Image (cartoon, rainbow, N blue to C red; front, top):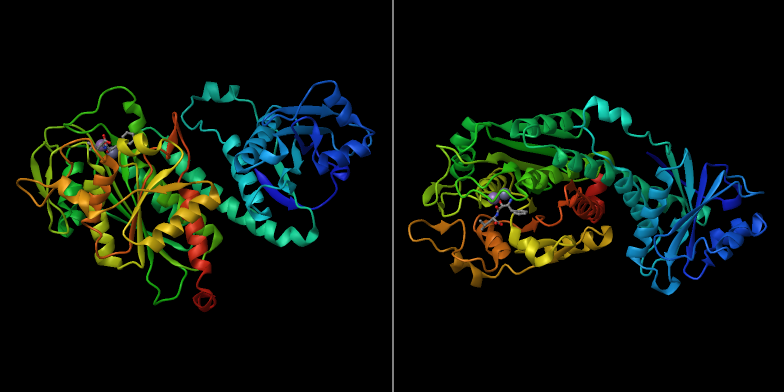
Length: 508
Ligand code: BES
Ligand code: MN
Ligand code: ZN
């Protein structure tokens, strides 16, 4: 989709469709009012006939409104004006695109961006409109056969304009659009990788995709550590998970250097478990297919790299993605096995299904030793317990650094890709006590499962300013990857890189 920003009056747009809002009880928004006036009351007449009341999410398509230059006018219900909030705005944006999908309109000009949303500004409106459009337009059909592909209807809509009230708004809106498109590109990459099945998206495939990303963006460099490299580094925890699979493990390392030389990098670490059957502690069959999404943390790191490379953000960034499958096999981890991590900490693997923390702990140690990052954020579909606690709306956030936690929470709030902080208190650490090793990979019971997982990781990140995002509930919805938390991560990086204006100038 081609998105652009414009500023002009609704009745003068020569496009396939003009999109305007109507509040509940048929109250026209200013843009709708303008079209109505120019067309001698065509909108009011349609509303009076009872075709649309303005309830949130309703749409009504009108053809050939006379005296206006567009071919169609799409009325979008906004709900009650005084209740018009963030979610009502997103709902309206989504409903508009959904209604347009099935029309012949090739281009459309939206005035929804003019609408006043409580506590939000034009920059936010544009970003959210683009995010909503992209999500509504996204289809994953890479795995449909040639026959069924032909049956999919072509999308006529090629170009979307978002209007701003004044010419003076153009720079802010353009900036918002640029950021939104970069976030969309990153999230789309994350979705595409997430949606691929485990037999296609293997560790080797993810490594190839990382190399491809580095080839597509000059700023990104990629290297991939192989099993023998990991053996040399002593990554006994990661390798123990990979032993249960015929697919060789990979440790993807991405570097992006666009900050000053002396600037410590921000590190992102993403769980790249391309299929999680649980290992010898085998998962039940129900919904096991969804464990192809267990690499979504890793995909989000790739997505964030794509977004920041497109924006050419002035910062140094490193990404590390440990990739493996978790399957039952003669060589697989067995409950009670004890492995030695790269940090030298021995781990008793009481449950082979708690494999995410095993591959992450070595990746985190690698990042700490090789990059000494300014901050480190890991992203993982780590626990079912996090889904129980927060459902699908918020990612779980844990951090040993309050300022970092706050910055991530704010980035989530700004983008609507929200996180909610859970405690990382030392009080929980004894739950990971092991009889025979330094630490157990699970606690005895089911209490506080998301927290004990974070506490496990914390044993390997004490020396860093670190945060952990548990995206088990947010990385996919139903059977579809969401691209989360690419918006949160990218927003955090946009903010961080702009907060050091002196260094920013040095870099260019
Ligand atoms: N990838 C899963 C977590 C998961 C489960 C995400 C369900 C989304 C939905 C992870 O590897 C796992 O299996 N975790 C276990 C940990 C337990 C054994 C302590 C879990 O959550 O059941
Ligand atoms: Mn598991
Ligand atoms: Zn897993």
